[in-house]
Length: 425
Image (cartoon, rainbow, N blue to C red; front, top):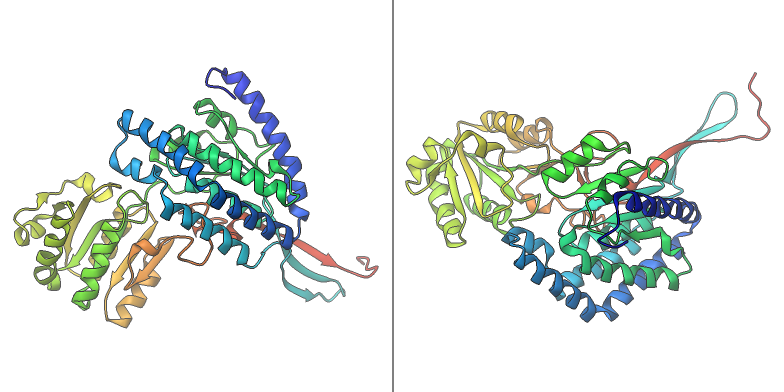
């Protein structure tokens, strides 16, 4: 593909990729665990060997991104340094070490007729992934799709084109060295938006689409796709500090949840604080946030405690800032906090800081989000941290997959029946 290809040419070429992916998916479905693990380790070896080339390609993307005026959050997502390459390599090796879900048989039992009935875990088939900015998604998605026996077509953002192509070369080399089809992982080589429209309307080739990126991308995919979608639209995450919280735990968690990284979907965007502890904890937190350059926007009660805090408007409570901005609301109690989350939350991740066991259990039970935490930072809502090796995305849907989507989320179950000449009477 070239930048001057027409929409029809792009659709034709993506159709060819889809046809190749469908053929590769059949081969991947029967690949044994040893072969898939060997491929993952070979890709890790290639990434280590090509480390300088990966960084060089990323520097080109970073320079172009700065020239285009990308904001700090997007540039942070885009950057590849040695630490992030180390993380990608570690993710590949961790996925290789994870149990292979494919072929697992669950709940096999005898029926009165004498047959045995159970369910077997199988790959989804061909997974299309559309994402922006983060080149590490290329390796995360490839590793999970490979281990779960799927083929995948990856369409990264234009801002990461060189980085993604460099990573794709490592993946292809690893697959070749492992005697698995190179077309099991294909990276779209154009930044033309027509590629998105084509990819999400090819149900004959793709079994599921996973969009990862901004609200505009995900809304478009959700609206136009004729392929099933696994997605989350927003990451409006909350931390609630209960009046029975340990103040030091509350301080550490609320600071980490916001400032560890700003441009990630598991970053806290609204801090809810119980009235009984607000005057004690908020001044200390405000000083820490100010030292890190975080702008605070608060309710009227928050501003009484923090006079320098800006006034929050209604839109702030539902905003995913992905930036050093934080909304703060002082609430009467946990019920008020949960009511706020129910109204403004996106179903992504919420946390309570409390030493009260009963309240914590209620929070876990009643808050309807894909991840709910007690005395822990929302930053832990991540496939790597959950032991999935990596994640293909985080789903706030309630059907098929919810929360970080790892190996099991990329498989389905089919019914199997074992007999010995049985016929139905």
